[in-house]
Length: 132
Image (tube, rainbow, N blue to C red; front, top):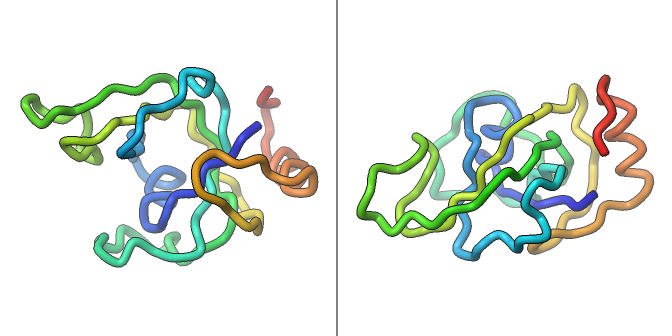
């Protein structure tokens, strides 16, 4: 299972609110479509973003698991697919989001990265249904 680091408040909005689109400047690699990923809150917040709730004070930790079900580009000439979507970017579609009851500390990285066995064990111990 891979992980993806996302700055706060966006990681928290995926875990605890209705954000089901991750905005990226790059297209989702086809090998990740349909994959379960860990949502990791980065060490630094997005300083340009508004604060969306109390749960957003978690940094450098895995906060959720999600499935990436698709990707499309928004050229800005259509109505965005989601309140959270930004025009002119690729929209990675997220489903089956499971927020972790307790964030799992982890050092993130750019792009997709492989979490340690200790992180995976701590995450899966909190999930009631198995994720393969």
